[in-house]
Image 1 (cartoon, rainbow, N blue to C red):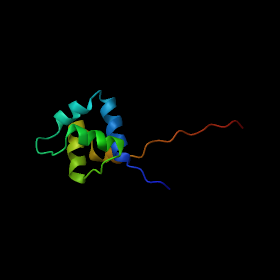
Image 2: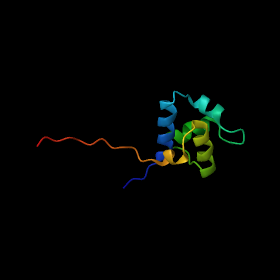
Image 3: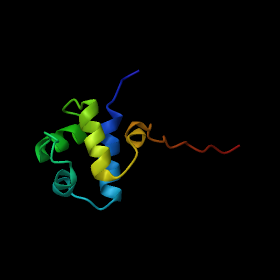
Image 4: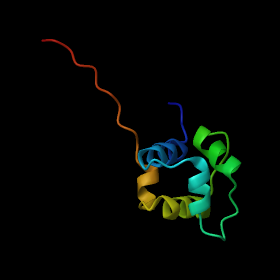
Length: 82
């Protein structure tokens, strides 16, 4: 089973659903956050590891519970005829 970084995918999906750009997400981060716009883009792409304190800052900026960043994406179920 291949492991994937679901938090990056979820951050991107939530950000898009909220109509935010990466720059707007970056601007909404707490001032204490060391993340840059490039870091956010790399996290969303799964090209960069993300740490727990960074996930907390991102969840605060997105105004969502941190647990929502860990949700497994729903898989489409293929319907068959009986």
